[in-house]
Image (cartoon, rainbow, N blue to C red; front, side, top):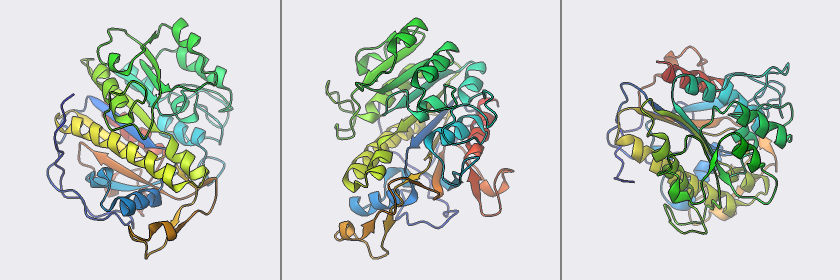
Length: 366
């Protein structure tokens, strides 16, 4: 996989108040006709998680240099504070639903997902997570259940349609029902490096994806997130009609729930490495859009205005071990968007999480 230094257009002014630091400047490749749609989700990654990453690193994160951004409201249908199931469903289907519902509307009806839309358009489709594949976010793009804890039902509904061509997740000791994937025709790929060269029509892989693995590392024990995603993109992109991919960095959320700033930061930086690899790949083409966002904020992370790299660990605090109703960031690469002119943007230039589906669908069906 070839990599080159990314050159990005000077960032437009933030459409909401943030502390993003100096941004990378350069040029952006504009996709005239979009073949590939990539959605990258940092679970629990609120704006202050990003700000913390910038302060501790001493410079802006790569994702902060993506040219266009706005904010996303993450409320679910029955709560201003969403869970991952309702948030993933909103992004995947364009419909607000209740917390704990996966791929269903509030009445329990199954919803068409962006994966289904992409498959109908002749594209390959992929779902990747650093969590187990029965997690709420990957299942939000592939399964259906009234309760996110119904792992077996979720996998059954996700595999019976076969609309997801590639499932890749983390290896856990808990039950993930690999036999269901095998029975549905998925080929188990044993090594990360074998994904890109596979001739299978459907792929299932579980790997030890660790944030602390060196970026793009070929270490057989620890699989770096960016390496897993780029191997998968190589396989997905062999389809002449392009692909849709959702890749989730799940453990930023775990750091928030545990109020563990070091863990959160290590996962955030691994996610940012993955974003960099994906955008570098897209920059060498003219047919790909990349969206980077979060499903919600976790931990209610607060940072004092006087925080610096030297004193940061004395200048932050957590407000909760749960989720918050904080709006999250939305970054868009690969085409030009005037958020203020889009019909689904309100007067404050804040989009809804359901609008992410609308935007992706508009490119897939063009």
